[in-house]
Amino acid sequence: MSILLVSGSPRPTGHTISAVRVLARQLEAAGLETEIIDLAAEEFPVFRGEPVPAIALEWRERVRASEALILASPEYHGGMSGAIKMFLDYLTFDEIRDRPVGLMGVSQGPLGGTRPVLQMQQVVTTLWGRVVGPTLAVPNVKEAFDESGGFRDESMQRFLPIFVARLQEAIGAK
Image (spheres, helix red, strand yellow):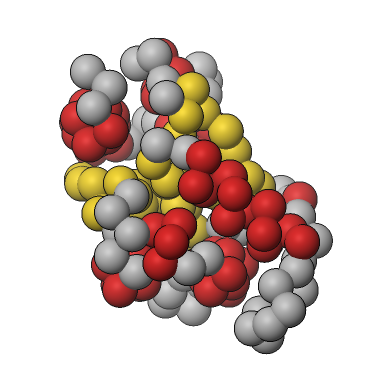
C-alpha cells in the first residue's frame, strides 16, 4: 500500500524534507510503501483556477493512486507554507474525500509547528478528508534529529509508532 508524503517547504535546504524522510523510514519499517513529493524541487505556477497546469494534474493522479496522504509544512508567519497551501488548492474533493491524511508541522521554535497543522487540518476537513491522529509537531527542528537520523524529541519518538499504527488501521494494512 502506497503512502504519499508531501514536503511543503519551498526551500531546497529546508528541514521539512528531513522530517518527512524520517517519517517515510518509519512507515517503510512497518511494511508500507512510500513516495515523496518535495515541493522545493517542483516548479509550479501560482494557483489561478483554470487551466490546471500539468504538474497539478500529475499531483492529483498521485494522490488518487495513494492509499493515504501525509502533508508536512514548515511554520511560516504562524501558519502553513504557501507551497503546501498551493498544493492543496490544486486538489479537489475527488482527491481528498474520505482519504486518510496525516499532518506534520515543523518549526524552529518551541511550539513545534502546531499552527500549520491546525491550518492544514482545517483545509483537509473542508475537503472531507479523514485526519489521522496524532498529528505530528516537530519543535526546534534545527536540533530535532539525532546522529542516526531519527527524531531526538521524546514525544516524537512516542507519537510516531502510534501514528504509524493508526495510519495502518485507517488504510486496512494491519
